[in-house]
Image (cartoon, rainbow, N blue to C red; front, side, top):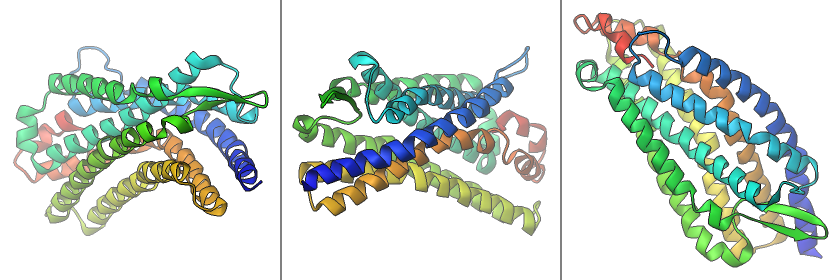
Length: 312
């Protein structure tokens, strides 16, 4: 009886929370990233800078992710009843993972590129070129596709009482194999990029704070922006991976029903927060810090003339 109540609670949270949240986020992400791609796509013979290439890939990744949301909206609206077949279930879960980690890795690339442009402007001007960004982007997509491919093995459908569920993780009999893979994704796909992103923005904040060419108000604005970016990362990607693995561990060794329900419900909230990121990225990663970087460059012997080469 207790297990039955837990199952009802799980479905209730997903159906009543994820369906409307995914629906709203789909429209916001579609419009925002579609507009961002329109702005970022190179036109004419103008040189494409590394930051623009990374931002364009991020926008494409976010747009592709948003296009997978309608299937999930339909799935949860129909009471977690997957009517689209096994193949599309696996493809949808693969695209979910692929675009999730694509977003994370391209955010890291953008952060590292910005750090080089602000902290080491002369090095970035001579060493960081568009061809390097293109090669790095191809490598990122290959890595993301590789680490996401096990989803085809683990994800499946399960039918009970005429209701078909699309399993995003793994069925109970495969949990012992799936958990190490999930822990790897948390460490390599989220933890490592977060550390690089964090140190990149710390470097940016320190360089801006020490600059004599910026007023105190401008410095506080930049540091505030850095804190917001790190905070957004911390409240979405990190909690999602932590709670996903806690939820998997609870499935392997079930604690009390109340604890399982609490962890599962918290995990569903982080899923909605992860899907919120594609709605925010167009605002954060296509325009911020350009003016600051130019001002910072003015204090570094004619870097102002080249600052556009390292924008974004």
